[in-house]
Amino acid sequence: MFSLNAGAQSDRPEGNDNVDPAREAAPRKRRSAVSRWLRRFVGLGLGLLLLWAAAVFWLGLLYWGVPPVSTLMVGRWLTLQPVERRFISLDEISPQLPLAVMTSEDGRFCDHNGVDWDALRDVVEAADEDGPARGASTIPMQTAKNLFLWPGRSYLRKGLELPIALYLDLIWSKRKMMENYLNIVEWGEGVFGAEAAAQRYFGKPAKTLTRREAALLATALPNPLVRNPGRPRPGHRALAARLMGRMEGAAPFSDCLKG
Image (cartoon, rainbow, N blue to C red; front, top):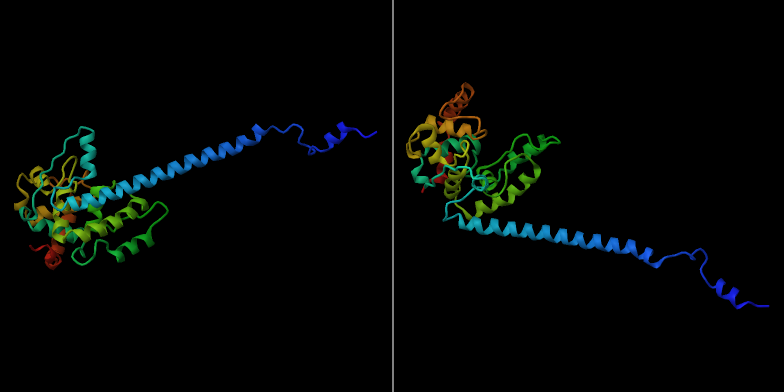
């Protein structure tokens, strides 16, 4: 005789007798939760990036007329460490110092648009897996790093420097760029800017720096926490002497700084 029971049982899919719908839904819920958190994380990252870009944009404009503040200064203030810095105009700085800095660090300062692409290409081609061994940084790139980024050697920081340097070079004159750079660059533990450095190492205002003193300050910049311009070691003195020789023929490099 035909059994209704048997017919009903045969309509069930084979092998699904013990399937728990809640267990099937759990992986989907987990994937959905992970997806939501991932979207939130990406959204937060993009939001912070846009906020940082807006800060760079507006601070760049603000620093045309307001003394700029570097990230290193901010870091020292936040950790209650002293900062020596007095902002002065480029007219209050001996012309020997910007000439020495340009000759030492950025000989094409007056010609490029913020980035020396030829020098940068050479550095990238010579880089190893740890990143570039030297920076090929122009003065605008170093200004960008000091104002908005962090010290260190990495492709990430270098990649961020480039657009900021191009932007600052676009909105600032070369004279303003040099003025801001010489007022934020670090010249020793807690010593920022030309005036503080001149007073600390030579006991005089930046306006009266000699060519030798300017060369000692410029050659200290690659390692300002080790090289003391007031008490230079033999290697430091030798670097400064060579720089003074190069400065003799470098005066045309500074034409863009004339008021």
